[in-house]
Image 1 (cartoon, rainbow over the protein chains, first blue to last red):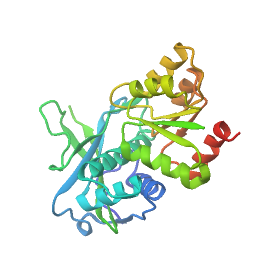
Image 2: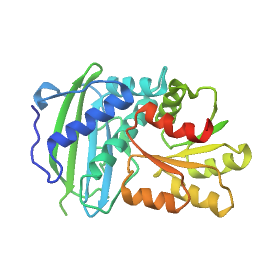
Image 3: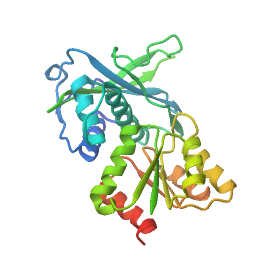
Image 4: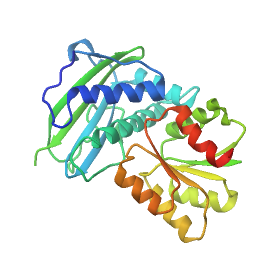
Length: 157
Length: 121
């Protein structure tokens, strides 16, 4: 059971769970267990990646996880030892793939931004040019390298 | 045979190459480029047998790369690997001279099957 705060027709919280699990399984051979938000608290340094969707639907998809989770993802993708920068690169690319699949379920046409990643903030869109957004849906997962949160935000202005 | 992998994410380039190697294509030579500009130079200098490119990249993107190559008379087989493999994009890619488009996430064997048609066929 997960804490989808709001259904986003035609995309549901279950769709977001399935998309994310498919990406982690296909690329990282890692099983993600969907859990309630309170069972997957993000503690310690958190990395975040966001991809903005612009067009017929305006908003963003965000991924947040501890450094350990991003490092494990990068190690699998690189097939060897990685640096902190590699973890950000891996998380950004995973956000891009999740967002591309989310976009396919939203009103068209729309385009994706290049992923923005931050190693010191849960909000990679922080900045004066970022439009106001409201949270539509957040799902949480647990996996061997740590928790993962995926959320969808809609531009309000 | 030479396969050029173009993606602005090094993690994704490595993942694609490892997936193809593990699917039995490790005997080929893999080249890498982080954007379309770098890829155009590599195509010109290294003459790869296949280009696998992301669509959206920081810097010169995959579609600009494809159009640049075709505009210069280069007919190297070209495939997109993108998280946005919609029907609209598929049609745009094929119309612009690409041979195929593969969606992300992909299964290693499925990607390898497509690539084999161009490097082992």
